[in-house]
Amino acid sequence: MTTTQARTEPDHAHGSDPHAEQIPAATGHHGPHGYSGQKDAHLKRLRRIEGQIRGLQRMVDEDVYCIDVLTQVSASTKALQSFALSLLEEHLRHCVAAAAEEGGAELDAKVAEATAAISRLLRS
Amino acid sequence: MTTTQARTEPDHAHGSDPHAEQIPAATGHHGPHGYSGQKDAHLKRLRRIEGQIRGLQRMVDEDVYCIDVLTQVSASTKALQSFALSLLEEHLRHCVAAAAEEGGAELDAKVAEATAAISRLLRS
Amino acid sequence: MTTTQARTEPDHAHGSDPHAEQIPAATGHHGPHGYSGQKDAHLKRLRRIEGQIRGLQRMVDEDVYCIDVLTQVSASTKALQSFALSLLEEHLRHCVAAAAEEGGAELDAKVAEATAAISRLLRS
Amino acid sequence: MTTTQARTEPDHAHGSDPHAEQIPAATGHHGPHGYSGQKDAHLKRLRRIEGQIRGLQRMVDEDVYCIDVLTQVSASTKALQSFALSLLEEHLRHCVAAAAEEGGAELDAKVAEATAAISRLLRS
Image (tube, rainbow over all chains, first blue to last red; front, side, top):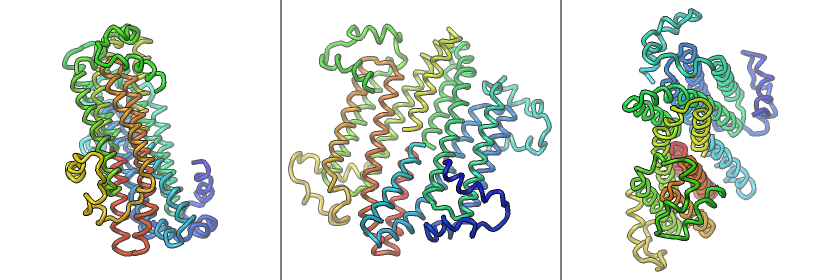
């Protein structure tokens, strides 16, 4: 996570500035991402999850019964995994499919990378 | 979730007011919760998770490579489950143990309730 | 797992012999287990899961479409977790409740042990 | 599961007979599967898992301490998910990649199907 954070944190300080040209390495490296088209839907989803996490803070702050807090944690986890699945579906449709056209080592690398990501989701 | 939200949302409007006496039903019903003693630690943990979710929004906004976004989702999910486990441990130590002293139906109910919560965590 | 296996494997050779007195260390150490009463139900459940795993072998052997194999893997995993939950429920009802009566360090140890087991289930 | 079982059970009665031509619908429908090449590795893995499930039956039969049984359940679940991941990796490399060459609706269908399978694994 540290690497990823490090990659995005610097830009964070700029607040509302447009970030597109500030991370040329990332966009140049990977090309247009599969999920760009659904960016708004993804952001909306993540803002709802952020609201759920703030709801959890209120619940703890107000001494809500722990089982009810746990139910809300399960809902948030499910929402995060649902977001991950939609991201993964786009990734398979675009990036893995693009790699399939190149074939060979490129396809193998993309498939191994996607499988490792799925494995991390399963173990989390 | 709706029920739980409904139970906490009303108080939310009061912002920084002390909430203790505003939710007498909940605290009166369940007694002092096991997690009250670690409230600060829990809130700190949840604020970090909230920061991770905002980090995810930045990553999507900046078109970070989807596999890197998925790695961060896994980290956030893991953090949420880790929070759930610490909540559950306190619940078993306090609420379930208290029910054990009363025994019989009270213990059975608390154990069934905790098991159902664990089942929801496993399936999420 | 090796330790546990080592503990049970020796007795396995005895086949249908009654095992009760062959593992005095285990029963003497932990007392009558919470799940003993439901032993038949547990064994029946596990035999069904064993049948599912053999079904998976047939599917692979017969070149069944991989997505269908994955669906059966999900069903088997779900059955295993369902078995784990019923075992855990009995453990909380009996062992943790018994520790609650002793209180203090004994309760803390049992709760920490149960939480670690739940954590392993969540991460698997 | 019933459907899948029904599809494979009939052939099961034939024991060691070659099954290839007995399930023409399945093989004809899907073509040579991605995992056929690793069939032996898959079967070996599944036989080990079957052994783990039998080990669980022995543990329950011998009244092994429930926490130790739960540890073995976690190990078996992990082994099943690891098998699922290797199956999924081959599926992405072969079936999804083949669909990518056809593109359009065929690719969309395969990606949606794979994502649904991953979703079932996550929720189990």
